[in-house]
Length: 640
View 1: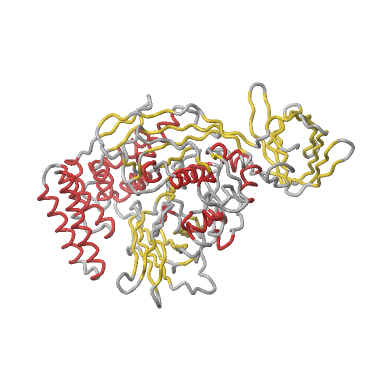
View 2: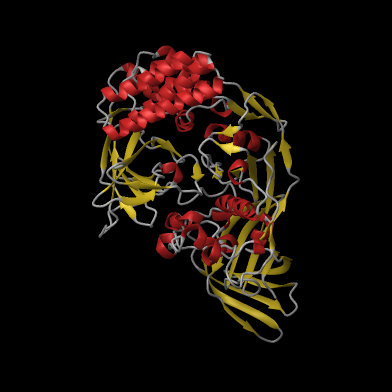
């Protein structure tokens, strides 16, 4: 067997060569990365891949030849590799340059994995694949996370795991996006935040959204270096729990290697064809179990051989260096222009998607849109993941100059469970609001003018429901005050704070100072309500912080400041209904945490009256009344 990683150098050019023509699941390819050596420094120069080389045995050696595609627009060139029988080394010619190469590893790539776990969150160890029924012919073996990647030809080298102790208040240790973002920034401040074959996995207790995992290093120049899994959602020692833990760990780390969900491969860089049933038919670590088109969760586990698909293997082993290495190319396609979503030629899904926005926005105002999913004809069953942060709903934004961008949320949530909802006469529509003004590519609405927003919802059966165009108009500033407030609202850190609904992170201190200035100097301006919204929501909650000595410190809530800011927000008529609902429930919690349950209940009563006065339809009003009563019950239990 000759497949594996070879290393060689010719003068100032170093070659990492990957030969993949025999052994376990060979892809029939040869690829490599080229580096330039200058003194004591080495710099990445480019990559290449030969997709279908000719391989022949001749005179006690194996000859591999083919035409290679190179990265960075470099013209195609010839590649030839000669490896004597017995292996150990050989020669390689890449675009006319010759290298003596020696065998370095049976793995095509090697990555350092650091695992830190919060006290009480026990990291996954191993799962025996024969513990539960599986597909015929799939071998019974013990799979760790490292073993799962080793089967794909990737070595995971585990650093000594650390357990993070907890100091301060906070009984539930539920994490939100802002806390995860801060943990990531703190962690990478201790290491070089640059492209490297290194990834950090945080094992935390639970996420406030109930998610199993999240790839949260998603918003700076060096993405895909950090992920988290949430112990409480997958805990247990049963075979079913261990199997779920293995899949979650491998899935989240797959995102760090720049692998997209199975139904999103067309958004990869370079774009890849979708698998069966729009990707929902893939038997892959990167598919959602409950979305498997051939029988859901039961069908998935009955057929899943615990491996990546062939196309994913090609990416992991032979993707260009910057497309795979952590901290190099951004996740997915990047900020490149896309074509606006086009409605399907035929649509028999029985689902309708709308995007709604207020008539106009001031420059610097957070752009929040509402999504409405309804049925047409007979009742329909689907999933309820309508918010774009789960990426079942995707949003395209056509800017005034004609450029169309794919909205990419700051953090991607892996939902893994998908309770079905039924749209019928008793529940005719599902609503969600989302802040789409800022994402991984920065601010999307930075200039006045007319924008066109369109959304695409991927239904439970794989149907792609496209909305009509929603116009979004951003007005020109009129007064000097308008100009100053717009400048204060449009900073990069401010956009991140709006995405995270506030943060204590020192990395976002300039953004917090700008919002404080909006409140302090421009408190009567209409946009000050959004600064108060962020400051109030952040004050009202506890905040978890990973300290430099790797301890978890919990800052208790500040209900007094929360009440001060959120009361002003609740009185403002400018925010959308769904955000107002959130604000009033959090205001009630802040009142309860100050020891005034009567005022907390009064806030919930006022919430019901406010929406009734707005003329909200009877079905939604019923949901709001139930929500208010559940909130009262939960707050009474919390303070008792």
